[in-house]
Image 1 (cartoon, rainbow, N blue to C red):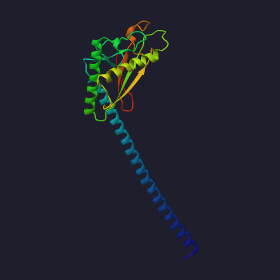
Image 2: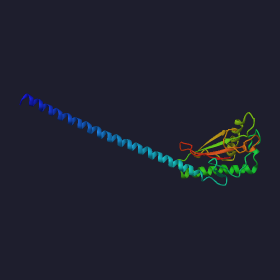
Image 3: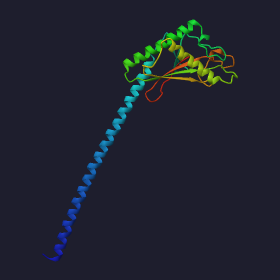
Image 4: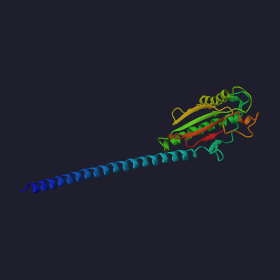
Length: 221
């Protein structure tokens, strides 16, 4: 075989080997791309289903609060929350003494507390992973008193202690209890919000689902 033919044979053999190698590399890259794409699709589907599951839980938790006793709670459309019903709470100025509230309304507060416990027990049975945050928020009337924030906190604490004294506790329920005082800063206040309006010398109750985001606020005067 001539030198020229040997060179041509060597060239085409090398070219063929190169094309084969490149085809193999492209095939491997194609398979790898398909595998990575499949993995990403599975990942996206997993995230989507997880999100759907979370949204379902949120909806169930939100819907569950509508089951609370309508004898003592009603839905307030303006503030998108539940408020205490048929219960009058008015402290004396600068006071956090629960005895400022008359006997009948103290009795109703006890029944409202019991209805919260009953609601929590039902939620625990129907939604095993249900969790809620119970916020008792004290408020004060709009005046020049220097300790309105501290006073409003003590008013909220007086209700929690009143419940405890009468056997209403939340320790074994899917519920985190927070005592707070907003003074005169809360948006949820009785109008006209002026000095001397005793209707704001009170506490407010919030029942909030805990799916990770506080998506709904249920509140009572």
